[in-house]
Length: 222
View (cartoon, rainbow, N blue to C red):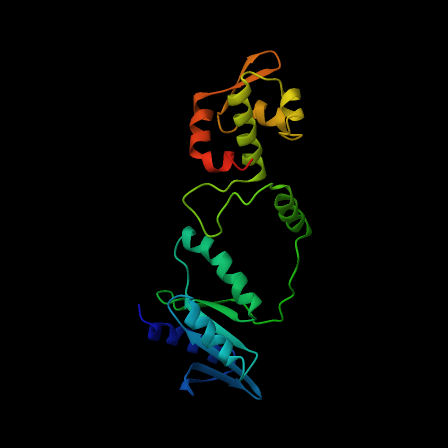
């Protein structure tokens, strides 16, 4: 498919809505006019940074700027488009899907002023996680090693104490500074690092010992 393949359906749609359509006007793929109204549409096969730069530059001419791209063909693409839609909305750029085979155009949303919402629950969660981490145990931008969350940090600390002290009760571990969620972490045993060896007594497993070797540099900081 070529970008020019998107032109006929979009032109047909605009003309059906009473617009006069012109192509390649001052580097704009499509201009559509009706009385004093001016719409600019950029035709692209996918959304990328150059397109966003181009579209925002067109906003110097008119507020009514759209990008027209082929309709996503599968669920994976549709999932990816959730983030893309958010970016376009924030930039106040309209989105048009074009089905060339069906000669069909769908205006997904128009370019309207973006009202940014802050998610208080998410903000609270981020602040809580950041404040409860004892050390900088992660490296920004890394992806090969799993992120050391507060939960994993506490689990590593529990495993380290168990390896050093042997079978221990949750109460004693808490007194050693493993946190209020010690019993929950031991009971759920999400990582498979612990085992109950007696009533109210836990010990480290072989998987737990391997984890401590993996996080050796982190154990030294705890």
